Amino acid sequence: MGEEIKKGLMGVTVDETAVSKVMPEINSLTYRGYAAQDLCAECKFEEVAYLILNGELPNKKQLKKFEKQENKERKISKILVDAIKKIPKKAHPMDVARTVVSIMGLEDKETRDNSPEANMRKVMRIFAKTPVALAAFYRSRKGKKIIPPKSNLSFSENFFHMCFGKVPNKDIVKAFDVSLILYAEHSFNVSTFTARTITSSLSDIHGAITGAIASLKGPLHGGANEEVMHMMNKIKKPENALKWINNALDNKDVVMGFGHRVYKSGDSRVPTMREYFGKVAKIKKDKKFEKIYDIVEKVMIERKDIHPNVDYPTGPTYHLMGFDTDFFTPIFVISRITGWSAHIIEQHAANKLIRPLAAYNGSKHRQVTSLSKR
Ligand SMILES: CC(C)(COP(=O)(O)OP(=O)(O)OC[C@H]1O[C@@H](n2cnc3c(N)ncnc32)[C@H](O)[C@@H]1OP(=O)(O)O)[C@@H](O)C(=O)NCCC(=O)NCCS
Image (cartoon, rainbow, N blue to C red; front, side, top):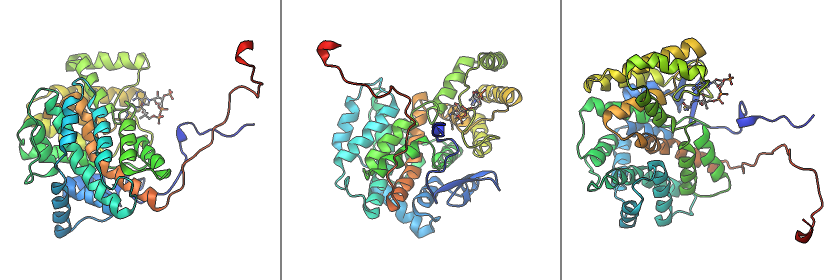
């Protein structure tokens, strides 16, 4: 018998991490020991970013310092702005996210320094500048004037400001902040594992995050929040939802925003995000998407016992906030930079080259014949 193959590394434990865990005893995703939904109730995104990167929640003084550093790094270079203006307008913003982080790596004086101190300084730059670069593309592809970041605004407020030229009411900002907290970290998912794999060859943080973004783009991972919106747009109205989802299941289609490799009886992030989706829908006086949401969810659970993941409520929430659908996954990026970075730093601290084996199923050994004889 040949080697046992664990396709998709399913159920394989490849390393240790202190960053996050889905704790079965509380049935919840936890960051550094804190339940993600408790963090949503008590903290703003900046506090959670600090926690993920530093291991502890900040006190007031530490938070102020962290916010000041983030603020200071918001400005992006002229080279980057010019590059963003030249990017084809039809480019997918996830490809733009990948490209802007890559360009930042070209510009960063410390790109090749993988010490913990340099890595933390680079994290602050990537964390602060990526939303600014993405918002610049959000505007430039519509032929609108790029709006520079404003230093008296929070991370979330500033993103709205740079995309739309205004900050919405505080409940909408809070819903956005909550989505960032819930998206910030999730252990050895595909993109984080990609980042750790790149890091394991002692490559640099810009490269690792660039690779992680490419990995997150896929519809089986972060790209699912965009696919959820495409699905809702195809369904169009609540009256069509029942027929649509039953047809999809009869056809054995994969329904985006449902299922998860780790959670098999419900994603612990969903109830919180569902609540904030409801709040945003109420403010926007929109019932359509909530109705479609509930019908599709009910059928998925009844017929397949498959529960929604966090991309299911974030998709329509971002839509109601006014974001273009192809910007949903880039929003995921600006949050997950924190989780990826914590893992990259962790990988550097106890590195082992990631190099698995494969069971060979190709041709037996054969002799090479010269070109004239083939
Ligand atoms: C996330 C995902 C890739 C996890 O996949 P996985 O752990 O490899 O599990 P599988 O794909 O093997 O799913 C197990 C079974 O459930 C079914 N299933 C899982 N998710 C499903 C979905 N979203 N819609 C329909 N069926 C689904 C599979 O078809 C499979 O059925 P089978 O045993 O009859 O073949 C998968 O659930 C999926 O594709 N979801 C949609 C994309 C998505 O929302 N991604 C975001 C994740 S946060």
